[in-house]
Length: 157
Image (cartoon, one colour):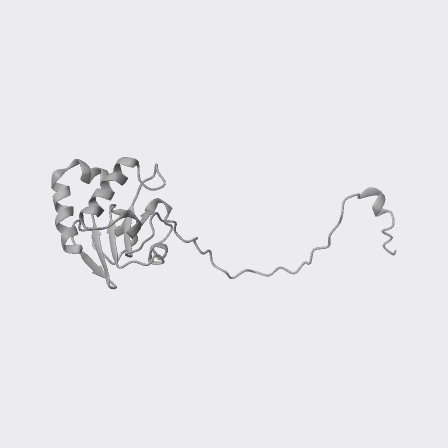
């Protein structure tokens, strides 16, 4: 019996497309999008924070960070401010050009297994100077933490 398809236009009114049965497998891996950061990164200084409620910082923490940076001759445009809540893997951080990194979060040490979790201790990794510190809101509330940060920033810059 031969296939007579002349009756099909009376039953099927939508367009019909023939799809090839050949399926090709994609070998490409997922590539995370480039990290967004605040600032122009003019001096290649990476500042890392972790804030789950805001895109970057609330106004009080941003003002405090601005004062810290101004004390060592740096403006907000000189840095790349990254919120680690958007980071999927450590390689994303490495894509941002930087010679200095200041992390106001312990999460950075968890992402970067090459550094210790010691706070207020300047570390070197692949020609990048790094400093880990408490979150900005904690530092702003405690004089001792402010003093530890200031002491290390003077050495760093």
